[in-house]
Length: 131
Image (cartoon, rainbow, N blue to C red; front, side, top):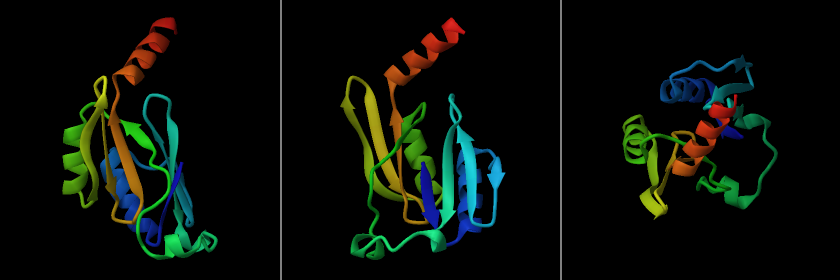
């Protein structure tokens, strides 16, 4: 998963603050964090290295697929992201069966999804028990 930013240094600082960790991979054009129980990759690419993505991307409106990252408390995480400078995109809402999802637009124009997901926790617990 990779986001983009025209100001990579600012994005690196913002995500370091959001995640509470430094990137493990740090280059002038790209940084990468390891996130969560499975240490998934969250990268940020300097947008000068992106190809021309067409009128939709040039409009400045957020777009693309929303990737949801698991959080323990969707409302608290959403509120914290807003406090840290993200803009509301989709407020927390219950998708059913205690799946609570929300999304914000980070200060660099990327959509960041968060989800409180009881089934994810069950999978993590089962894997931990089998280890």
